[in-house]
Length: 306
Image (cartoon, rainbow, N blue to C red; front, side, top):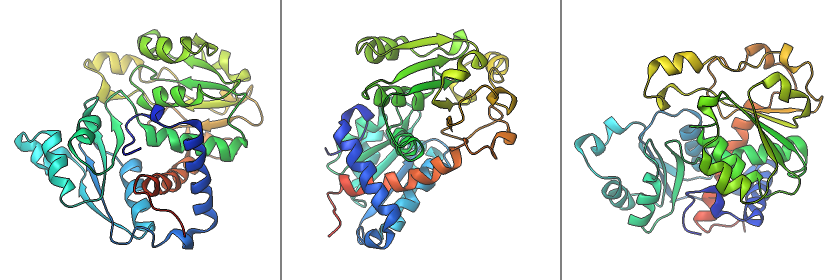
């Protein structure tokens, strides 16, 4: 595998290999501290990002490598009209691996076809976000001790939420997993996800409007924000943005071992009062993202621990 554009490129065995490597990095960081000496990661971020960009950068630095790149399109030649393919070809002259975030679906794929070095999709529009999914999966593995036989609730913006689309695609591969899709009508999971992933594989799922109704049956609750940047109409955003807010009161009927995840950033969809609940795993999730990205960088660069 040269690139990671879509989580579905990875087999279950490859995902487990990445998780195993990440867990070994957590336990033995010194063994990995110099493996990427002399290597450069280029972070090409055409959209704002805190966690994903800094996670990639800290991952490469902790592997002993270095970083170059830009954090907004206006600080690159994209502002002059340069194509994604030409930008990638240029960066290939300076770097060994690229992580790209772009508002247009398919842009990282276009970049990957233009260059010989690995390209990692760090989020492309409302499409996919495979490294966030790997982050979610290592967090599930650490929090639950398993990847199968779980009821996974996805709540909020399921239409534009690329993290949700990728998570559904990945977790559908595990035996006994089912989904409860919690959203307003306007933000339902796209038909392509329902038909191409869930229905084609006969994965049990149901769509509901009420978070309270779904809560008692969930093993995982994956909260998402309603994203202003994905709306063409400000009035629609204002009307829907507070549709689902998780509070301690709403958790009263939840399982004692529920795991609450969120790709972050949050706005107000999870009350800060929930942060002290031991079931709230979203900041542990952020830290796990660094380790799984370290494992992915090593895999794509074909670097192994001696």
